[in-house]
Image (cartoon, rainbow, N blue to C red; front, side, top):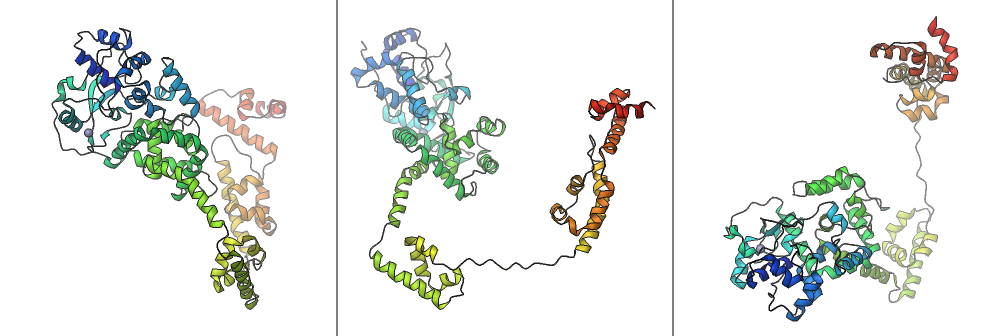
Length: 506
Ligand SMILES: [Zn+2]
């Protein structure tokens, strides 16, 4: 039985509570404290969830600290599981409950998106000492990607306490650190707004993680819609909902390039399979690393909170739209009235086009398009095809111009470098601009077509040219040019070699 357990401070990390326990217990050996708290002398210190967490929670129950309270209020569990799919979340929770080692979602390990050293805010230390008589490790300062204290708007400092799991890890109270004489300095913080927003968002997650998780699970299909709508506003998606991937990556990079998230951004550029940004746009159900989701929503909506707000309101928004389409008061009278007005306008101007009628009674048009759409569609003037003014082209002049380009095109084909290309009509056409002109109107261009015909190669001529090319290549490489090697290099099918072998030997 425990004789005492420290009362946790607001947002205090479990690591910190245990460290304070060790200090106040007066135990010389850390292993004695581990034995008392976890029933295991070899229990290792961790930022995450201790191996024998359940054992500890059993003991702290009598001090009013349940398993859930410790897990959700004092570990980073809510943050690292906030954006998991339901399956992954359940799996992670189960592994915590079953005291399996695998308690960090794999992606977080894999990308080493994981803080290495415990951090603190110098101003918080001063405040906490004033208020509680001692300093402690704050949970939200230990989140990967957070660089600032949201309360004091200052940079966090990194301690030298490493928290990556290792055998030698110990629980060390913040108050015991040597360097802890706090100096408050004027700071020049690069990317102040971005860093501060991240700090706010982390705070928001800890305060609202149940809401966020529920929203992400329940409104999963809305995530994509909301995302596309926001991207569309910024011209980063098309009306049909296609994301302009390259432009998005580019703008995203530009926004965050000078922050400390270079490694995340690197993944963005280099590794196509791990293209998390695009996956997020698609509303992928994959496991999401918290900081990425934060950066993504900040980019889209300014903050995680406003993004969640948009998701939440989407349904209301859709309902509201439906309301708008419900028959308004006096619907029947208005229907008769506006239909009549519309037909009157048309009668007055029987040859008018749609926009003429719209102009002559715009309120009738607006009402009908909203409330009587189908009727209106059947009572509109035919769309008039605009008269196309065809410019008569001077084909003789064009023919002369194009003819003069043929020779140059052939020269380009012959000197394109690498293995020779065969000179065909299509190939010559490729080098003559504008291409379409020649393709569609070849009948109107007799001189050009005649000239092209003069240059077009037969297969036999083409092969001869390839042989010449192979010979000169071999010579350049200083290799012997036996008929066999030349023919092989020229790329002529072995079946046809006999036709050319004689040429090479004579
Ligand atoms: Zn602070």
